[in-house]
Image (cartoon, rainbow, N blue to C red; front, side):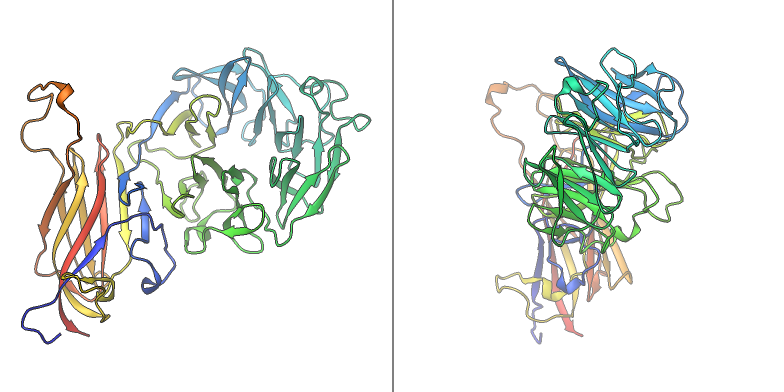
Length: 513
């Protein structure tokens, strides 16, 4: 430290794939682990890009005022597909960008239903109205035979309908879709079955952990059902219970679910072990168990939708996303431009696999992810907040490796940003010594000079490469001095989604603490 020329240090934020960690101590966190990741998606090369926007895909046509009860699964029948919703007890369909009423008062308003597309019919159930079905172009019908007790959820497995929820008993229909509307569809005189588990059931995952068995949860444990129709169950060793049946989602990695016993957390059961995914996240403690909780899986990501305790609202207002490839959590807040909220999610699995989400307050339907790279014209607010870095997190700029002394007072000198984009700006905020000092720098991404095919036209056959990434250098004010620093990377704009490739923070070492 006793040098005439100060030692120059550099901290490189080259990868944003480390995930959200709001619990661990700073010294235990990796350099690429964050305190907050909101609306930033990781890039495989180590950078990040602002998340895609929301897109309103239907407005209600009947002036509903209460929360939609259900956005049901995408239904396929005879080569055609249909998106169904239940709004205030009415069965409606998405008809281009509007809702069309199909069956008025088919269900009790306010009761959360569950559905499955199976055979040539769309099956819907809840604990108040029991099991019903419809077909494309048809009205709601009640089959000639239904389970003895109404059940909250309905599934399709091994040529049968399975019904559970609201009691200990799991019901299995006769095999074969042609038998499901018959008078003996659920009769034990045939090959239908039922079985009582030790406790009330709390959801199922079909064809897991093997194709010959189905996974069923209670609040306290998980069980395997097998050997239909002479059905039996076995308790899975060291299993976890599920406290939110609609949080269960089967993905490529296994089954995701929310548990509150024996401890609270989101878990992945891969068929051999139960892996806790929220061990470093404090958001799990703020999940309102009295509110509606949903989970859905798409393209290597698990989407967890819930109501946050203390939010002063009763509807789902938060979404957390677990990227299984990168092993990280990120947050997707409600878009302020839409002034709306999250509801029942569903995948359009029979065509383009888009992720839809119903509003929990209005008769509106949103698309949360698209196959293109668009932000859907929405002003998405992106925020990435790092841990607190000390001198021990920096490297010696001259190539001397990691700086060997912790808690050395630093003076930040400049920030070097490598990014791609032609619109808006990226803002980097810094805070020293837990808020004692702070400042920011804004990095404009707006293109300079003439714009190809706008200001002038070129022969497009000669354009063979994308515009290069920008490298922008900004110096920092003299008050950027402290022992600990954290950084926030912010972006908000409508239009092209910018990519942040690399950030380097330069500093000089001043004195040891």
